[in-house]
Length: 476
Image (cartoon, rainbow, N blue to C red):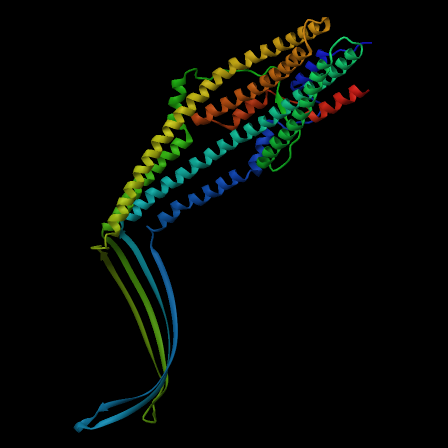
């Protein structure tokens, strides 16, 4: 009995990627939640945000009284002689020995009355805190995009492996059939050789596809911290929704107002402007209220003068003072002026950075918007291409059976079918990626967007299990 290729089985194997499975798969939202707990980048961003939040209390602390306290203890011994003049022009030598122990304490209070640099520093710190919060929100949005990108990279690699394996299986059957036909003299040896070459190439492609799948899974593990083997994939009813609002200009307007990278750059420009004002305060006078209170106690013992002992005695002293100190900088060698110039140049740099980020944001927004629109049409076109490629393969196989088409035509049509199916699945992933990139550019990307995508994902078995079942069925 002559064996032929079952195109129905091939198509079922290829399209089985979109069918429900019997195993528990990890949804997109579950993978994101795992990444939120494990991704080093998001934890790094959180730590940097927490560190930046401390800029405000540090700047505010300088406006409050600064109180310092100190204590001292000293012990000294004196042994020496002194030559002194006496009455009537006599000169006498006085030898003295003594021991002194002194203890004391002091408390200083300094309160700013006028320091313009501290007020400018407080204003700058508040903007630094706001910028840190924006950067953290940007890191959260970036995590969403990274998770989605690597999640669908794994699905795309699984699709490619399943398709390549199906193509290899079909070529193996074609090769077997060609050998049978050659043995009975129906075809030339070149047809067998063409099938053998195609089969060898398909085997090599499958090995490379398995390697690509392993790499894609490792990239996902890098974010989640765990190896996830089973994922959920879009089902056949996945909606292709056009952007809302349906206007490129409207999306660009939203992005110019809300894009987080652009908002962060605006804060950079404002902080750089405040830095100019901060450094100019090096020319300004300062006025402080300074209060001090101190006490000391000295014990003098063992005092001997010219071998005559003197009694021990103590001295106590208490002192308090309050003053207003005015400091006017006159000349610092040009350092302050140089620092101001440096800040002016840095401010100019941030202005150019702001303009660059604004242009990048506009480009990214327009590109993502057009990507969503074009990908919708591409998905629909590729879906039709799958149906057309399947019909063409069946027609080519029928022509080969009656001798009007060659084995090369069959192999080419077969390759076109699996390529069309792979491109169809990948175009849906590209559509989802463009939708999220559009919202990222507009600054509106949220976890709720993942929840909306997740409801259209269904569990599916990994390709290794599908291939194992298909090979087990073939061997039996």
